[in-house]
Length: 130
Image (cartoon, helix red, strand yellow):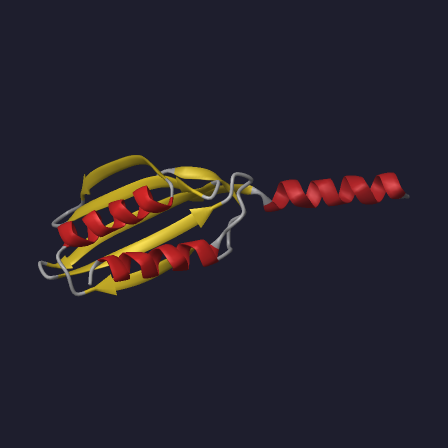
């Protein structure tokens, strides 16, 4: 009976796990359908928000990668870092020349989510803009 229960739990775990898309247009292991990101909108140019986000990631952890994507008419800048043994992904999109959208995503090594860390990073970015 215990073996069947254990096998059933392992099967359910395997069915629930999969790949999720990160905000920098890559994929990573994780449990889908769980909120893993926080979104903020700032009344500042994209370069200022990008600089503040880089500073926050460098102060709290390690900057792993930064990149720029060019979608149809707008540029998108992304940051990837490690903070508290979590993978952190930040996406900054320009809404108009003076306003931008910032999405922060934080995931554990095992694919779990850390929304509290994502929220903390978002608030630190906002404080870095003042």
